[in-house]
Length: 133
Image (cartoon, rainbow, N blue to C red):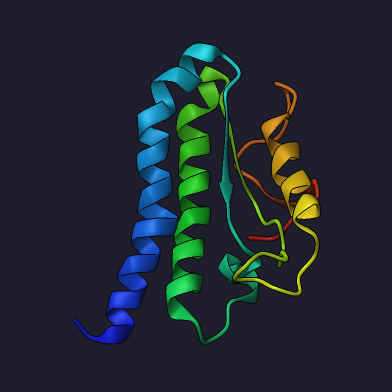
């Protein structure tokens, strides 16, 4: 397998299939709760509205994760499960040094975890504000 294809496969395995498997593993519990929340941590790099060249592994895997978010939201909505994608933005971690503080990125994810039952589903957000797909 060429190196570029192998990188894309690894990114898809992590960012798409990892999220999908997690959703499958917990979907019965989320449905049974009547107010489950599934939050996918995505990236602005997966926005088709701003898609450009470069970094195909990361861009494609986050684009696919955003699509999965919409599909799961449609499938789980009737059971009261809200499914959204959140972009915590560039965050100052070991691999993302120089970004905003981790607490700021985490707050964005936490917001989606704590949505009221009548909150949005099938959306893409940063800091509680909608982002274009």
